[in-house]
Amino acid sequence: VQLVESGGALVKPGGSLRLSCAASGFTFSDYYMNWIRQAPGKGLEWIAYISKSGNTIYYSDSVKGRFTVSRDNSQNVLFLQMNSLRADDTAVFYCARVYGYKEIDFWGQGTLVTVSS
Amino acid sequence: QSVLTQPPSASGTPGQRVTISCSGSSSNIGSNTVTWYQHLPGTAPKLLIQSDTYRPSGVPDRFSGSKSGTSASLAISGVQPEDEADYYCAAWDDSPFGVVFGGGTRLTVL
Image 1 (cartoon, rainbow over the protein chains, first blue to last red):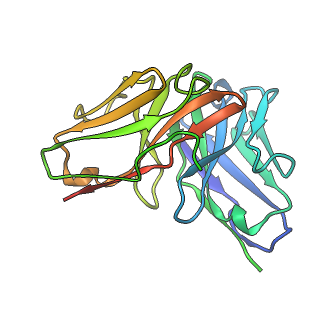
Image 2 (image 1 turned 45 degrees about the horizontal axis):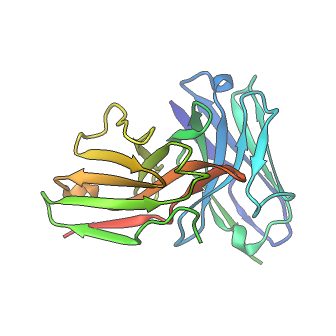
């Protein structure tokens, strides 16, 4: 099982960024997925959840209306489109696989997003 | 403020038993299962316990989980120097829908 995030970068406040998470070693379309982040010196924060088909999506209040999660099951990739980025979005972003439909059982190594002018 | 409450720190000497608590509410721990993760800086968090008490293959048997009502605990019986890390509890929350985490507990092995 492998999850590899990419797309992290330095971006200015108000800017946009798209993260990707490439999945391998398992049948991606059989699993719900999450995005979780960790700001510097802080704990883990869940931000988005997407069902196997992409029909069911939930967001945390902190990103609702600014971030969009999606997936391409034909390419085994999970995405996070981030708009209107703010300084407090600075964090390492992890994609994570869901066991069943509620428990996270496997994480990627993360990708760093820095929002600064 | 995290939805689940953990102590910020814990410590023990090698061989000691250490426990980390996690307190929630009826909408998360009280009605869904708890998972525990070990996190070393710069690495992917690792699943230690799922479904409240189940230890996945490859996790040392010194790690165990328990749950009662709206609280859960992670116990490390015979803590080792390599166990020094941050530990997080998590659970699904039914209101509003989503995963909630504890604030994390930094374990120091003295």
